[in-house]
Image: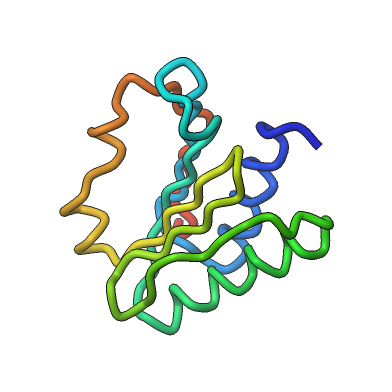
Length: 117
């Protein structure tokens, strides 16, 4: 599976868990850190955990076990480093504070879906 397909599948997993404002950024021309950033937020710590668990289950089901999970719901930002895809799961306030979409504003937006609609 290519990194773009992987990012879009993870976006679908997040949307299924009702993550809000799911955005996939193509950062391949901007940084060597990763190919894609997925950014979303949840409504509570429990919601952040549910989104995270679903993404981890999806990665494991696709034999991708080289990922790392950093942060916690109490910190308001969970990062899943899946190599070519970095998944950022925030609380709404922390997402607004860190504003990764603005920070990486030169990236191409591949997907921007508000799952609350």
